[in-house]
Image 1: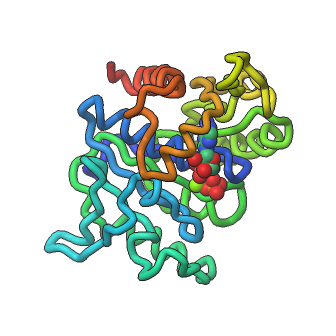
Image 2: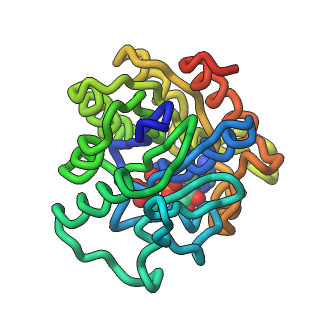
Length: 253
Ligand SMILES: Nc1ncnc2c1ncn2[C@@H]1O[C@H](COP(=O)(O)OP(=O)(O)OP(=O)(O)O)[C@@H](O)[C@H]1O
Ligand SMILES: [Mg+2]
């Protein structure tokens, strides 16, 4: 871990808001800028990173210097899904065993020299995300992903406060699924509302990194193991601004 410059957690108050999608796209965007990036899938029971990176068939193997991470075109990754024999096998472990697996990903995986390690967390502020966060030394900060509707914002406030209580810097809020441009008429519709993430960030005195629109292509690309930052859809532009703001925090241009 000492060879990793910046460790960032991706958290949310609510499930299904796009943490894993943000994690893989951020990893790809940073890698495309020439930075060395790894993703630690901190979600033991719902490990989606390999699917989203298109490396479901890869496996973590023991090498001379520890467990070798999987590689997705230059992104290193460790995930429970890369250990299980079948993708339909549920992990029915209780807390301590799950944390032992996370510990191994942290201590025994040969990450090598990295500029960024992104840690994709399970949703919420329960015991599980909390325990994962506590296992990772010297975190640079947290990105909180939310969607614009009130129920998500309500839970996101809790996530912000959890991170603050743990003395981890909040790098910023990302509002995902923020409006949809109708493919037929071109008009913008606020499916879950819009702007709530920015409002919440201002209220809680934490940075707002940006918004990503709802786009069926984001989902379709994810399902095919592709990142949208490698495509030409509008979400790519929105995400570019988020990446710039984040890199400015680390004085990287
Ligand atoms: N902006 C978007 N437009 C359309 N679909 C999206 C968008 N963002 C995410 N999705 C889709 O929504 C689903 C949930 O996203 P994702 O798995 O990234 O959320 P999550 O927060 O990691 O969920 P969990 O809490 O279960 O870990 C995925 O199918 C993803 O492709
Ligand atoms: Mg996820």
